[in-house]
Amino acid sequence: VPVKTFYLTTAIDYVNSLPHIGTAYEKIGADALARFMRMEGCDVHFQMGNDEHSTNVQKAAIAKGMEPKAYCDDMRKHFTEIWKKLNISYDDFIQTSEPRHHQASQKLFEAIHAAGDIYEGEYEGWYCESCEAFYTEKDLQDGLCPNHKQKPKWLKEKNYFLKLSRFREPLLDHISKHPEFILPEIRRNEIVSLLKQGLEDISVSRAGVRWGIPVPHDPTHVIYVWFDALINYLTAIGYASDEARFKKWWPASVHVIGKDITRFHCVIWPAMLMSAGLPLPKTVFGHGFVYLKGEKMSKTLGNVVTPMDIIDQFDSDVLRYYLLRGSSFGADGNFTWDDFITRYNSDLANDLGNLLSRTLGMAKKYFEGHVQTGEPADVDQTLIVKAQETEKKIREALDYLRGDLEFHYALGAIWELIATCDKYVDSSAPWTLKKNNQIERLNQVLYNLVNGLRLIGMWLIPFMPKTSEKIYSQLNLPLPKNFQEASSWEAMPKSHQLGEAFPLFPRIELKNEEK
Ligand SMILES: [Zn+2]
Figure 1 (tube, rainbow, N blue to C red):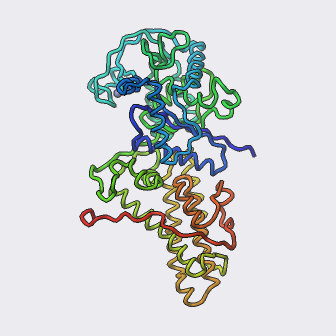
Figure 2 (cartoon, helix red, strand yellow):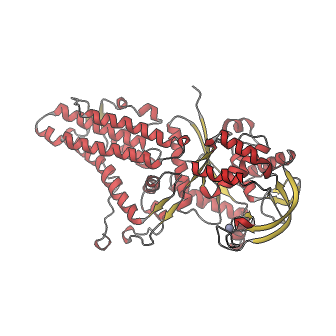
Figure 3 (cartoon, rainbow, N blue to C red):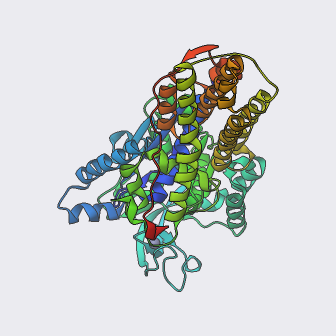
């Protein structure tokens, strides 16, 4: 069976400000999907990067007395440091100011030009410099940019235009034949209704701007920053430089993007590709936003001021868990500190942490940390059946072609398995077995609990990779390389010596006045 390739990208980020919780949410969600697909045995290429040819980047560089390129290279360090802390497992990180990107962007611009879809014209209209976007009168709200609530600039300049209007029918046709092209459905409906209203040609160059990629046949212009940014998805996998590599990865399996930039990814981007005769990405997934609710932060959390500080004060897995547990990736979610602390203490410290320390504690007390099969009983089936259900639910949850990425449902399924293990401890009462000298049965009970923890640790790999490592280290088992080799109940050795126990998630103790 040939290995399935899976090419996943996130949006590339403007570098004039550092990542915040919303940017982090996108990368964490994409990373969970990338890790999941790797564990499913796919050959995954996960790409991220920075979007650098913005006038705002140039301004920020000038304000710091730096050349834009040097500023961008410096910002890359800050970004990748944060992604490293969040344990984002990207395979390539592209900067749009790199030569490989310039070359590929010019090639695609030329291909579209050669196809007759780029023409010279006069642009006159609104332009928001913060969005780097052109707006029609009807896009504005009370004459202001809908995102920035500031008055856009009136631009009048010679520009190159993309014949976007020509692609209205082909795009509607593609979407109706490939509903999975835009997910979730709510995003698809928005784009379809936009297309039905008609499309206008758009300006794809800026005159007299120095920071950017020159238009190949007219270097007095640079390619419009959004047009160039989208091309990063082709650039880094060898378009214009490595034909074989490009063929291996294109078309992308999924572009993960924020719901605010679907118009660029689901209208302009596919039109550019259609014009150049390239296949379209299979899916554009527009995730929801995380809204920070409630202004007051718990004093007990030390130096934590913004949600991003969680990754310094706690493990990055804590933030990953909290964000992914809240809602499906396609829907909006909330971040509140009260909820964060409750989730941490109840789900991580109590449920997961206690199950591990309790199980290892009993194994150590009764058998010096050695577990082996013993005498089975009917009640064991509850655990085995639940473990099978968990696997099924996680696969469903991550199957985005069903409409959404339901990380919260996958984690919910893992926590159901944790709860089933807890009930199993109570109903099996190992302490009574010990008292009654039912050693064979006690062996089997502890073996089953360790086996449950082994599977819990494995299913957590996409979501909380560091926690999985810690669990496996305490269980003294090698971390599975893929789900298939380890997902069956029988994959556990029949006799096994456990490792040393240590607390996974120490409780956050609330001061009295905060309770
Ligand atoms: Zn704006």
